[in-house]
Image 1 (cartoon, rainbow, N blue to C red):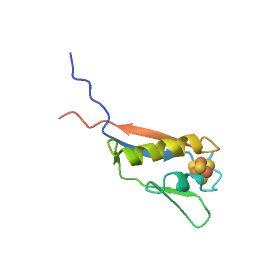
Image 2: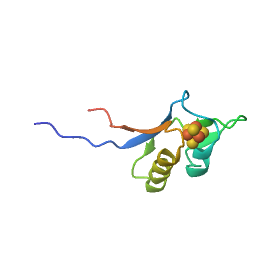
Image 3: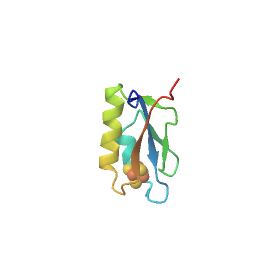
Image 4: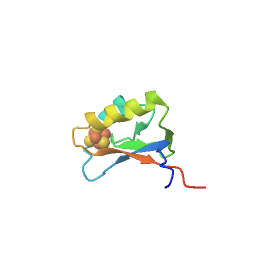
Length: 81
Ligand code: SF4
């Protein structure tokens, strides 16, 4: 009987093969995504707290709004002590 841990942070991941580089995700989640000079996303690498509701909602908007379905949210559960 273990304690089930919930993920506490997340990162946004992009599949560079699918991405078309039009940068729509940076408009939907500006706190998580910048774009490079060609329009391809530069995604924040540091995990973001899931309880940061604004950032988490933005990440979900970006995933839903990506025309190439190139984005996903990776949830991270803290390591067991
Ligand atoms: S919205 Fe999707 S396809 Fe467009 S730049 Fe972002 S990850 Fe790439």
